[in-house]
Image (tube, rainbow, N blue to C red; front, side, top):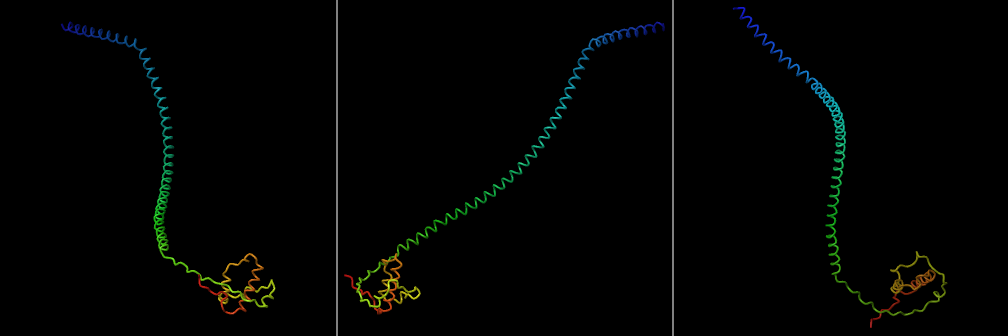
Length: 218
């Protein structure tokens, strides 16, 4: 009885082992058929990984170039910014100078009309002042006096120095009128010197009365 029970247990175990071996054989058979697909899949993965590594290397190089360009551009931008700040400060100074000059010019232009108005007012005041008309000069008649023999004996070139010539205060009234009258011989030095010498002699020998006698106007 005991042996029969043991045989039954062994039979069940052997049956289970045979079934398990059959299942494993089938699965191993499937794996053998799919090995080529697995190899191709692994090869594809390897290719993709190699491409990714190359792309990463290129991305790394590109990132380094971009970083260098950004650094250079940043330095250049800072330099340009400094130059722009200098230009802006210079432009501000120039604008301040222009504003100051314009304010000064406006003040001067504002002062010019006032000065012009003051000058015009002065001219108007001067124009409004009544001017006195000159009184008519009395008519005069000339009386020829006899010339002495000494005067007739004078040479044509006789002339005295300018230093001893009498002044207008020392001359008689008639002689002063003659000195003030326009001379017809103004352009001839020789005749002028002769006339001056004759007038000087007349001033010395003539009496202290006027040579012109005023006559009442008609």
